[in-house]
Amino acid sequence: MADPDRPLLREEDLEITFFRASGPGGQHRNTRETGVRIRHLPTGIVVTATERRSQAENRRIALERLAEALRRRRRRRKRRIPTRPGRAARERRLREKRLHSRKKAMRRGEE
Image (cartoon, rainbow, N blue to C red):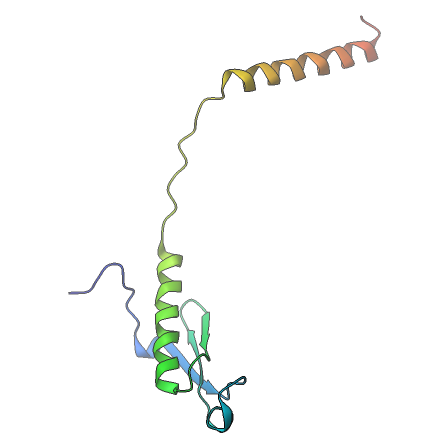
């Protein structure tokens, strides 16, 4: 049974490429294509992993990152429950309206 929190990653939806990772790690890292880039074709999400010297380890990390990105994308935001403005906010709004009204009245030559 599939876990609802874990998105289903199908092999045909993934484009996996390997590249030469830079940084520390010495000759082993500089001569091997240990960096992993995974593109999820349906969504266009791209994740990379270059932390480890092992391609298999980087692939596992990249797949975890992709799964997390898909989970974040699928997550629904809770609807905001509208709240009533407080007394101070109502008074502030009315004060601003009165000032604005007086300004306009002065322009018309009333007051």
